[in-house]
Image (spheres, one colour):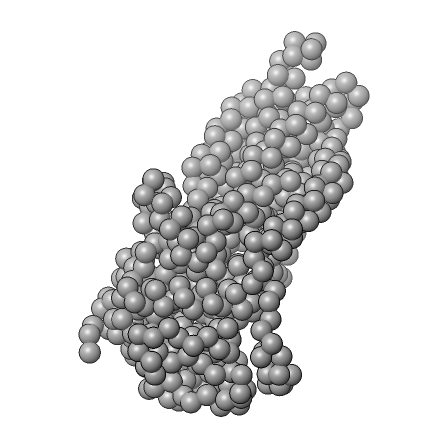
Length: 255
Length: 300
């Protein structure tokens, strides 16, 4: 296995007095696409938020690119897509203004140069939102808003993408764009850690699934078989291993 | 313009312009962070500074600056650590600050609540040359921070969690925002008064939101509204002999109502144009494939 990009060792975290993570071990290697699954309240979002430093763990070690998180400063290598909040932002901001924030990790003193503006434009093109660059984000649909947040994460041209529920509340057209964008990123060697409620349309991309329950790792291995709604007809997923190189059959959520 | 012949009016107008620029410039970040009432809280705390200034025969403006900066830092710390009882701690800070102001000013030799009134509601004729110097220096600091660090402050105010992952010093920037807001309160104190400061931080931004599509445009419109109402209010109060702070705040609210009335048909037209563009350009947006329907019936 190649070098670990993310390594968690015995992470414990509490929200208030309630233990949310009770000793999580998780390693993500370079080039892997790992899905963090689990029911609501299983701790998957908290796990991700402890990785980025939003939730301080009460015990355990976190390493990013082999550096203890406390000493990690190379944030340009990480692109983060937080869980989208449905509340509309207070002050208007254009798509470009929001995506430009993602470039700050590469901009010295917050000054954006020509190359930075070009990177922002490229990121918008990747998610198919270049034509909406000057629109207010408040005028976008949920799916378009999510694409903007992903463009913001891609603006720093990261090596590691961390996404919290990127498919939640996203329309079909945007789901397709997101799946395609993620596929391109994975193909160019980007490592991905995804929090997902269900595998859904991203299933073919996922190398490994880590399932959490009550703040503990329940399963760490190949993605679990689809059950329940996923196993129903009309909900079949595209598996690239089935027909390597062939145009994927567009069915189910991706159609 | 005979009012320019009076030195006190020149000082008042200069102070008014600086307030008109700085209050919305800080306010836009507070509104974005949903801390619209932070300015009000700082205004309460600043009263202790004014009282201390009288008691110690120091400049009330500088004392108010020192105390409100301290208060703002404390508010920010309460926000970090006092998650559950934070609002009660803030209430104690606000009303303690107000009570402290009244207490100190009455302890000061010859001091009474009457001295406080001009600080609470603003007063033009009492803006001294040393006040103007203080206001200019403080306003320069506010403009430097709000414009110079606009990308960083925008990122932190918009999405704190994401800002942390871009490596921005989120806590330092939050503290800086709080300190800048505190400084702005004391800049505006002489003109609009401590109890009305918050209106000038919030209402021009709310009015600009009706028109602006981008953050940059909203910022510019808010400052333009701020300068217009502070100048307009100051000039009106000179000719009509009405209190400047109240005049400025009422003008700001009038501007908000006027712009809202103006913007509603504008927004409707914009939404219609957008819907038309969408219907032409992006048919996928609302297309539901036939084979989805059956599965949609299934409850989870």
